[in-house]
Length: 138
Picture 1 (cartoon, rainbow, N blue to C red):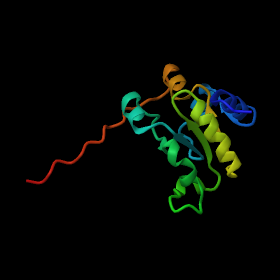
Picture 2 (cartoon, helix red, strand yellow):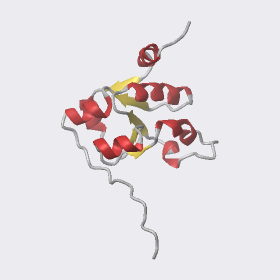
Picture 3 (cartoon, helix red, strand yellow):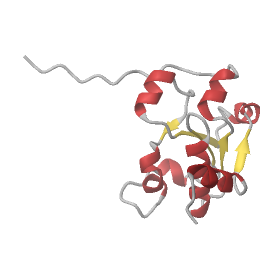
């Protein structure tokens, strides 16, 4: 039987940790917690960011998490860290949380409603500087 995105998200939600915005806000800023922003760079520039969050575009996440990948990022292998994933609305982060659990990351969850819910609740948001190309030398 064919799976839909909704069925995949629903399935993930049965096996992952989901934090309310209030719970996530309590975790924000702790030394043992890494917030991971899965959104596209254009979304960050347009909507803002959670201060201190690590940006890991959804398309690179598995490659950055896997310590055997040539693209591995050390932030994902720090002992004792808890990872709080988020996207715009919670679907990408739900699927990503399930994937990271399958890869062996134990302390991982996501924010219910994603960045949209975080922002709507008045939780901390900062502007993301727009990347600009450098002017050519004269």
